[in-house]
Image (cartoon, rainbow over all chains, first blue to last red; front, side, top):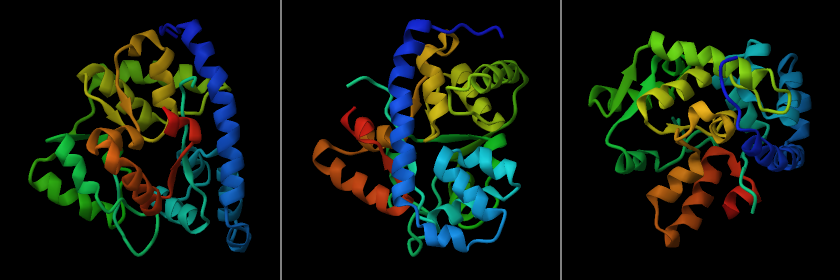
Length: 90
Length: 161
């Protein structure tokens, strides 16, 4: 692809990334307002559930053709946090 | 870019104007600008645009060649959070201009950590910006306010960093 991966740095990042992404997923699950999510019409309900699992706001709004800002407002009402993860080994 | 609507939690950091204490000007590539369609985000950007504290950057062909490579390498790796074309563009734009990229999306920061072509490219998330803006004494309070206003949270590891 014409880009060079520094594999030593890649492995270091991956080691942290896996646990951070899992932590973020659990955090979103625990914070989400599930009764609100279940009350939403389709496809919004599924989109919000996928957001809880993946955290990929932009990928999901494209996949479900929901305007980004509208989807973000739904995310906030559903109490699904955006989680900023750490990458450094501490 | 933060939107602003105090009554609804999560729609904007109440001290978002503070970012101009850190940077005289912000550059917003047009590929991101077109994603901002609704109020109050449009209202928020109109004044800095009029006073030239916020500049719109046109799409540049030179940047596009790196965009496609970044898009492919990041999205072909199932271990990495995906990147969308506008985000790949601003990452490549940051590389070419030498300006820091401000984003809370994980993939640009991750890519900059291990791709040699992005060596030296700075990617700052909200916590980086808050830490640059506020003294250690005020930082804890500001982080709490930011979380309350935006619905953006930081992992424990990220806070330790």
